[in-house]
Length: 80
Image (cartoon, rainbow, N blue to C red; front, side, top):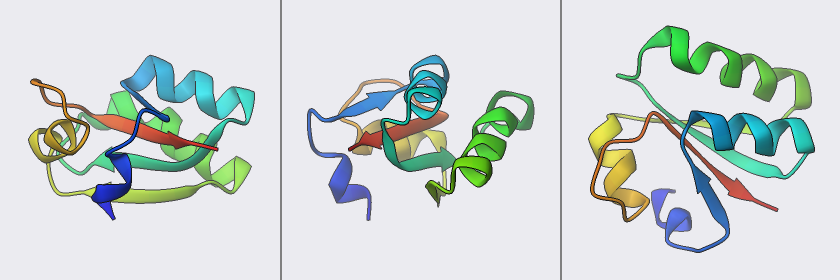
């Protein structure tokens, strides 16, 4: 499932994911299980409200690696 993030049609990071959700641009949202709950709780709520698929990833490090960035990531979204 993470192989879908190997595209330029994605956003990485909490602010960008929130923006994509509010604009209706997010198709699938990925959230790291070890991310701080305060950081990702708004994203999780928005996914439920907007009925966007939510995928949990085991770690922030793994999510960052899947997004082809050199740092960890709490969240990412695949865009429509």
